Amino acid sequence: EGSSTAAASGGGGGGGGADFGGASASCAVRVKNLDKGIREEEMRHLFGRHGEVRRVDMPKDRQEVQGRGVSAIVIMGHPDEAERCIKELNFTKPWGRALIVERLDGSGTVSVGARDGGGCGGGSGRA
Image 1 (tube, rainbow, N blue to C red):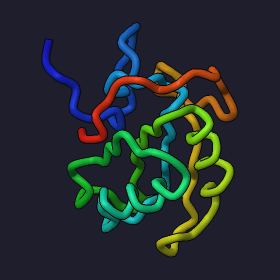
Image 2 (image 1 turned 180 degrees about the vertical axis):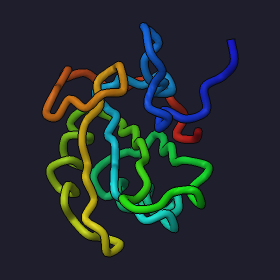
Image 3 (image 1 turned 135 degrees about the vertical axis):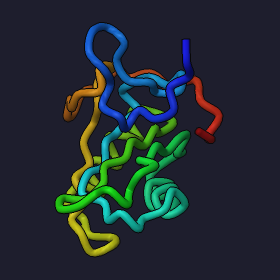
Image 4 (image 1 turned 135 degrees about the horizontal axis):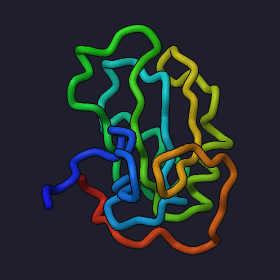
């Protein structure tokens, strides 16, 4: 009934899965180990070098984060673009910390290297 605001919440139990804004889950990548000061615009710029960024979901309460950094979800325009982001950005340090970039499946869990070959559909580019 209520609208889901962030796929980064980890998806909640039975059947619902993550909200990818109408896009195919094969276009979604999780980005872990972000510094809490990184902004959505910076994420869009970095991932936009590798394809169309349809959506970026970042946690709202980043001040509460300590230790291992922040996670975000990035929805790309096509599965091949998501795969390119994983290959090109995983373990890079664009902002000083090594990013962990991995693909998600429809339940919000990691599925590295999965492909569906189709476009990602849905989404307007804005959350």
